[in-house]
Amino acid sequence: MKKTFSLLTICASFAALNASGQGYGYFLFQSSPKAVWENFTTGGPIVPAPANSVNVAFLIGTGTPLIGTSGTSTNAESITYFGPLFSDPNFHFATDANTGQIAVGTTIGYGLSLGAFGYNSRVAFPVAGTTAGATYNVFVVGWESYYATPQAAAAAGGLFGWSNTFSYQSGTSINPLLTFSASGMSPLGLVIPEPSTLSLASLGALAITAVRRRPA
Image (cartoon, rainbow, N blue to C red; front, side, top):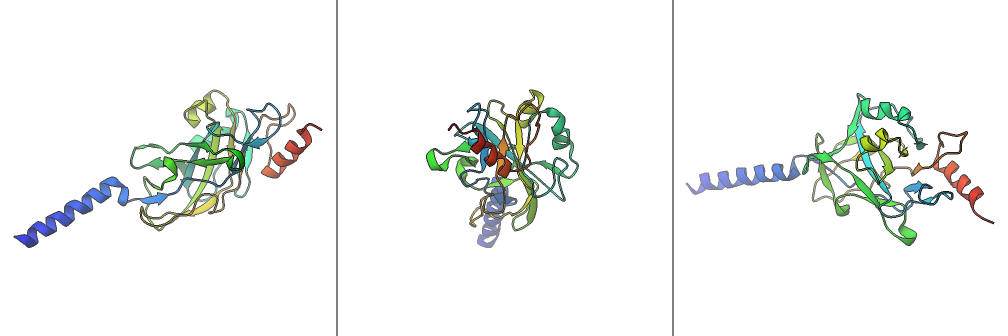
């Protein structure tokens, strides 16, 4: 009888662990400072995004996403550029298995830590459809925090930016995980373009523009 009770207890505990996300791969959706740059709050100079100015999410999948080539961070402002973001057959927005919602973080930090972002109070969380210890292709997208979701930002013609595509190895809730920056994510930018320019190819271009626009 005691053995039966013990087995039932173990089974119940296992089920509870799975229900709380233990059956999924865990991700640490967090970055180092200067991971997100923008100029829509300044109206000119390109700077590391202030706290709560940019929302971020990430997509997970296989191969190369339709919106850009691996290794290139890009900026655009028109919904025309983002049809592939929502219709890519190989990539989808990461969903928090605890909430059933898209994992949407925001920029955090002040001073030297500007431009960083975090989600779930910078604690690892389970991603639906993933398993622990597996490697996934991911990329991060950012948009103005005025819009709660990327779909709302796209519908309004808001600014978007996205990172390179990089590999991320999921973990468990008790194992240390790498941040997205430590896993190879390049910085992304949300920049109001010049009239003749609808996109900037890399953060290098963003930095050059920022220097040129700085007052003498």
